[in-house]
Length: 402
Ligand code: MRU
Image 1: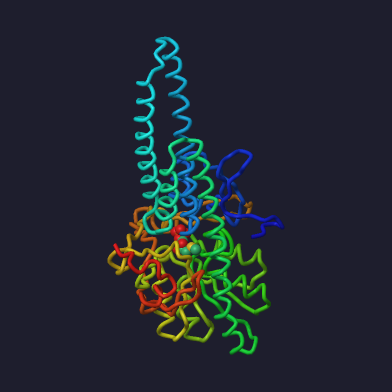
Image 2: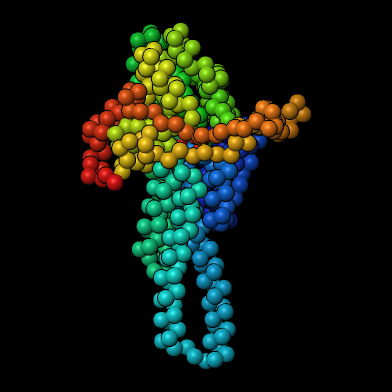
């Protein structure tokens, strides 16, 4: 997507520095800062502290984390080779014993790589895309025995995932367009009011976003739309990120408090709700940013269609009961206590809101049961929130139950 006229993604591989670069989303919308992720620790830190966030983007970042792990392994191996060559030269023992030692070292390296991948997967618990991205690239890495081949194959796979996720979001936009166009026709061209929660935009994916993809597509095709943007406490992904994205694209939008949606629905001011998801079970239960469930309840009570947009990488094919089985991240209570913004001088500041000694609880996600979901917008089309309907679009996962 364009930022100040320049094509930009929230993550890319910089072929000059041979490193992974990301937008540091903590600073948006006030500052556009780019961070470099050179090591596995850099990747884990960026995911945990939410330089990068949003399920599909976390998946892609984890995939590049595997690349970083192999780069670090190469560096370790180079250092150990230099050490070995020095001692070989001294003892003049270049023998079969050395190559046996090498083979043993390779096995140890793969074990090390698997451990690093586990650390990456543990960085955040709810979005299933993280494990999906890491596992997919790890599987490729384990096919090769030489480091240079491993490295090339892993980089290629991570870049392939980036392009696939971008294309999936483009397709979600095409399929979701139909829903918005239908409402626009019914309203004889009057603005279609869409409500969204959190940021499921291009910053949370690679391009287009998931929930925002149908909005961008509809806007680009001349459909009159207006978006209600939930501010999304505590980290304000809606007010900071979704509003920034939509504004840059010229889409009319209004930021509202997290509690306003029900009131707007009661007064006919919302035509459709479209949200993203961090993990969706094969039966259609949806984990998404805390507060999504309340929007779904209000939508149900007011007969407002409630759609969830997602690429197939966000389905957890092994789970059936979202409320019981999806792990819900609990984050630092300080995120609740403090609010970040800029002061009159333009300085980024953080201020304390409740009394210093008050406790706070920060459950980052909730689960919306499938019965409250009107349908899913996926890269393969739209389906109902039931196992049968989901599997009719993704029949290859029919037997894939954990
Ligand atoms: O905590 P975050 O900002 O990573 O949460 C993100 C969300 O809940 C998004 O709505 C979800 O990942 C869908 S992103 C396309």
